[in-house]
Length: 181
Image 1 (cartoon, rainbow, N blue to C red):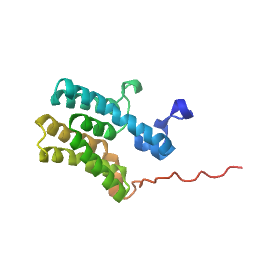
Image 2: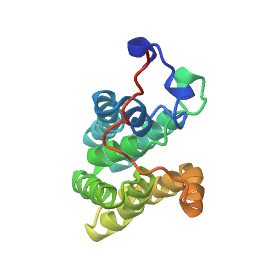
Image 3: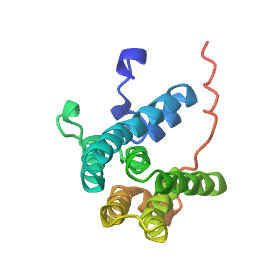
Image 4: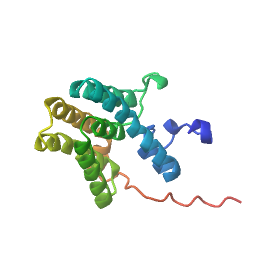
């Protein structure tokens, strides 16, 4: 965002560099491409590693992408995003049906409740359950379990706000900016 708008997304909203914060602050025009890129960040390495080596390599590559999103090298390992879209992309790469159903769960919960955090947690918890139900290999099931735990841990502040009733519901449109004279 700094290159396009001169703003540092880390100093705005939640301070995360991920798609949800970008969408909240700048709208769908920037939020959708960031979500796509965050997803792609998990998808490409997980898919390539799964295709050329196997499921274990795929989940390790997907996990590495999630870690890289959470603590990015280019930010000197400071806080990045919560790795939800990157996790989804990794699952599309290692187990496309699991990733697709997980994305469907995320969309359904988000539309019903309009909390990105609730949708992220529910979708993440559903991943290992879906993987078991579909008979996926053990690396995919283990990755689903570890990824679900990671998403829950990264959403601890959101969980606290949900419990206190102060978590912000997502709005599809940004509030109108006041007219300045």
